[in-house]
Image 1 (cartoon, helix red, strand yellow):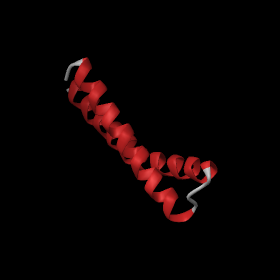
Image 2 (cartoon, rainbow, N blue to C red):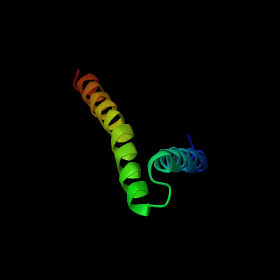
Image 3 (cartoon, rainbow, N blue to C red):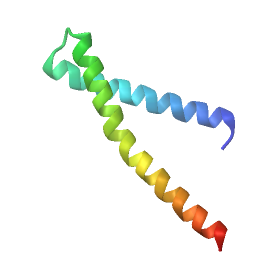
Length: 68
């Protein structure tokens, strides 16, 4: 993928996370930036943890294949 495509992907993912966080915050506390920030952090962590695990597994497999 080229640089422009990565920028578009990152932008779309960011907008999606913001929309997801906004809907979660409005269901519980519609007027609080504190709850928005907490929800945003939790959503980013819960979506980031599987990505990090998959990245580590990918690196391990790639390094094993290079050593052969």
